[in-house]
Length: 424
Image (cartoon, one colour):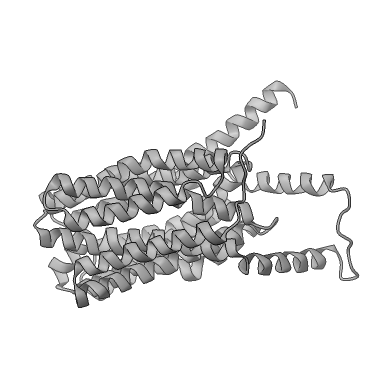
């Protein structure tokens, strides 16, 4: 390829990555804006319990159970951009209806719709970045999605908390809908398609294979589908799929069930104001931004399991610090520890799944990872909310820490490394 052609190819690649990061950040900005406000809005406006608040928080991620796998399949078959736009449009519809809610049932139902679209959106965003990466750069490039989410969530909670203080709690819900609309406009107007990159790599692997698989009488297409189904069943029965999936489940359960549901209510009971809690969530994301960068580098340079133990230790310390927090500085310290831990752990599980995806089934594999996250959202929000109602906030958070540590240790013990240190 001539030199100009190389520059054009590289420029096209990074243009798509940059625009996707903008889209994800706008979406995350909206989600962050309502994070410190939504539990307080539900409690103040509708007088519901911690368990009922957990249902509303959890239903946002429940859509992953039914949409992540189909979203990955559709993006594999019809392209990334169109399915990404569909998810963003559904998310916008749900967020707009939440902002004009007049009852608990209305808000909870439309919250589910918004999560339905958000699940499609994030599944395909991950697949888009996998298209752009090579195995040697996969950790760093996939971490860009986490970094984009964090960029929005660092600013969003502060904005949402202060909007709630000054203009009322509902104002943050309107802000979320506006930001979702902006992300949809960027997708429709500017985002390119990325599917052709993965297809080109698959063709090169096939052409370079010295002994291609024989084709039975059913034809090449039928044989390829049968081969892919066998590969997918082997994947789903492997220790990597099971234990990495459980660790990813608990990362999301901690985020949605503890940080976005139980902890704001516990913080309010301790006497903290909405603005304090918004600042706490934002501070959680600041160190997470940098440890996410570190996680991508460590995964590519030293192996995918490298960040896991530090992640577990920091998150458990953060939970303990929150339980004991009695002033704003202690609250912010707990947030910093939680953020550093999740920043190390969350990208590592995504890269594991990207590594083990069978050829031609990348979208379905990423969809399965998102399905684990959907289970984590529901289990985390419902279980931790119910434990908080029955035994108190502290017990709920100690249970969260214990199960999170067990999931991470299971990954370290039973899962084989998928990417070794790079050789010169």
